[in-house]
Structure formats: structure tokens, C-alpha cells
Image: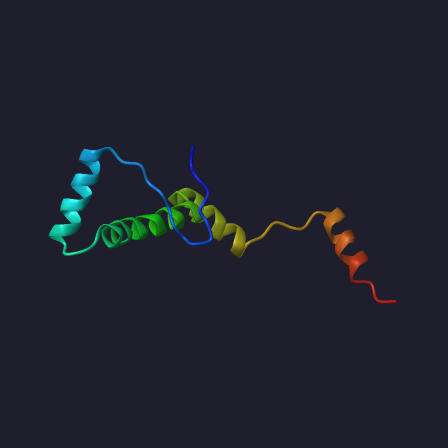
Length: 91
């Protein structure tokens, strides 16, 4: 179960000894400490994951449909027109 991040920004991570040894060796080869190596490797991936999750990806067909609707929008339903007029009526 994930632990909550404290105000200090500290995160605890449990690793198998062989996984820690692998990370430590990689960090040493890059001349970084373990925290620097992990942050330098993981932060760009985390940002890419967030970007992917926040972007809507449309197929070519759907992209063309959206462009068509933007250029030629359908008429507004009467109920929406009435509601818009009612909310903009000046006294």
C-alpha cells in the first residue's frame, strides 16, 4: 500500500537488494548519487505520463469531424436558445 508523502518531500521506497545494487551501479556510472539518478530518470517519464493522460488523441476521422463541426456548427436547440435569452435579459 502506498505511503503518504510527508511535508518534507521524502519518499520511502522498498527494493530488493539486487534492484538497489543495479540502481546504485547505474548511478555510479553516471557519476550521480542514487537520488539524483532516480529523479533524473523518473521525473521526465512522470511528466510524459501526465502529458499523455491529459491529452485527447483523436483518429484522423474524428479530427476531421471536429473540424467540420467547428466550421459548420449545427443549429442550437430551441431550448438552449430560450435559456440563453432568459439569462441575458436586461431589466
